[in-house]
Amino acid sequence: MSGLIALLDDVAAIAKVAAASVDDIAGQAAKAGAKAAGAVIDDAAVTPKYVHGFDASRELPIVWRIAKGSFRNKLVFLLPAGLLLTSFAPWAITPLLMIGGGYLCFEGAEKVLHSFTSTRTHPPGKPGPSDPGGDPRHLEEQKASGAIKTDFILSAEIMTIALANIPKSNIWIEAATLAAVGIGITVLVYGSVALIVKADDIGLHMAEQGRFSLTRNIGLSIVKAMPGFLRLLTTVGTAAMLWVGGSIIIHGLEVLGYGWLGDHIHDLATAAGAAVPQASGIVEWTAKAAMDGVFGLAVGAALIPLATRVIQPLWSLVTGSRPAGHH
Image (cartoon, rainbow, N blue to C red; front, side):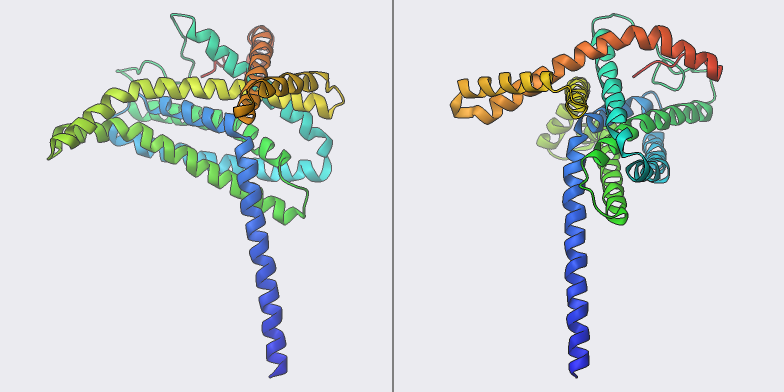
């Protein structure tokens, strides 16, 4: 009997350790995922454009196809690559983060630039005018493939940012945490995308088929609000990219020993918070985020000619494809 009790005690102790590990993984995943907010919002803002122009019956299958590609990107390719980095080249994480931050800044600045222009080009694989004479299946394949490629870039940013914010532990805890981040963010992003792309259909159904006037009015309001909501989502996504991209580069400079810019921004934000003691925390955070975003916009603007005149032509020359545009 005493042996059985001792065994049960051991099992209980193991269960407590396992439960604590699960709690740690969940907590670390939530914190690490929050750090990738800019790329996550951008992902959610970009994807609905890939189903634009398709029959309503094909919207959810296309979103599901892109979501499966996103799971594969994160769990099959990026998770092992991230773990290899932490094990064999941890010094490379900060430079890679800064490159990802620069990409976010470039994307954000390009969107700001496009917002001031009256025309936009639509590269292959990206949303654009549908070819009415084309094969719908081929067009769907093209759009889904383009979306999955774009997702790979955004997922790489998300996973690298998350990896940098996971406390050093054994490889299995790190792998489980990174997998939790990847799965959780993918479910969140593509669940939100599914709701967004079907919201107008749901609203239209409520407006036309609702039994009560309140239901019909709510449905009509949803239909009318969706274009403005999508524009707002794009604006928030752009601002988040610039803020997160700028802050990643500033933090990377601090890690590399160039902390004067980060210190200066911190001092200015602290002074702004002290000027409004009733809401010092909010004011300080807002001021810092704004300065990080302005810095991100400046970096992105500087990268636009480099990317469009040097990197894209070189990539096009190497791959034999036309230069890729950006969403």
